Amino acid sequence: MYLRKKRKPFLKKASDELVELFESKRIFPTFSNDTWQHYRKVELKEVLKEIYQAEPKVFVTVQGDSGRREGRGRSNLAERQTRERKSQTSRP
Image 1 (cartoon, rainbow, N blue to C red):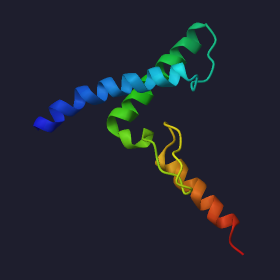
Image 2: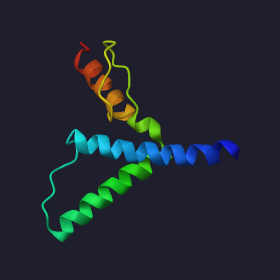
Image 3: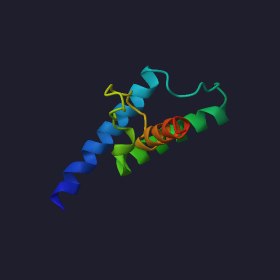
């Protein structure tokens, strides 16, 4: 119980920082200035924050097959799928 109390504020702050990082690196799609697009942008940010708070591992830097570090924001699932595709194409 103690750990959950301490973890929640930490994840909240970290999810805010993640969204700021995504904005600064222009990872988000471009949205126009109309009301609907503004709503979509706000919702995207909120969804990303919720996902991060529920499962931060999705956004953690992963180690690639070649030993080089992949960029932050690449999910473990995407990395695994990439490796599987590579191994399927290299089979005789």
